[in-house]
Length: 385
Image 1 (tube, helix red, strand yellow):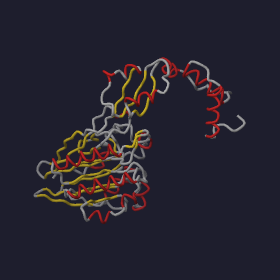
Image 2 (tube, helix red, strand yellow; image 1 turned 30 degrees about the vertical axis):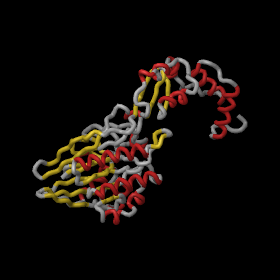
Image 3 (cartoon, one colour; image 1 turned 180 degrees about the vertical axis):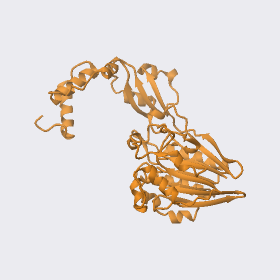
């Protein structure tokens, strides 16, 4: 039997000021095409379906479209919630969805729900574990010592009967670490993931009883501990740090005789994400311009600040997300020790010093007035300052 493993769709996500719904629809259509071409039996969706706990109307419509298309094709769906999802919202209508073979486990109720499939000699049990915290599991197993996420997940699995005569798949959304090393982050997972502590980490050996573990939470595609414990990665690039990554969708083939085979099928976005660097003149030279519709992060090496650089850039690259500088001034600032800069200085002196470091000249009084007004509105200084 064949499955596609998806994770971290983050439907409704934006990139700077740019709405990604159209890009997400494009990539989901590509996944639907792969499902047709490969005669897929099921899709494993490992959480963070939405980007926000209260998703936009456009995001919910897009998920509805995707699930309806899969249902039309007779493809089963096994979906769990992630830390970005609202459990109750994602779980809404799950009983009705199940009648169309769309199985959703978004609210942890103390059990590890299972769906069983069979094709000839191949019998597969698919378990679905929504994103859980130690406190949630402790509520259902008060007699157990559960001090961290690892103990929590081990407790859930220990209390779940697993038939080793079947092939067993788990769909989960957690931070799973390999032996002595953490998974490589893509950069767009969010502050919570990037600052994860030992309490949240789960050892990959926790899943020894499963033939394949479809993980979500990390946006970079990779195996953890063994190839069959895998993060699908996000289907699109969601941060500059992913600009050089190649996105893919894992195709999982499970059979009684051969076990589990994994093939990564490349995904091609509607608009790529690129980081370009050089002077304004070089980057906008006609012979250097390519794929102008891509999402662009530009680093200018001009020594002088370019007035309205974003406006100029967006005339050529309309989807420019951000512009920064790498020149002698910025490199000098990187070397400056600012630890004592704020000592016994007024707001105006601090802002003036910073401006001088950045631009090599003095602020005008009009510019200082704008900064004071902004600081008062933000509550940084009071009206008397």
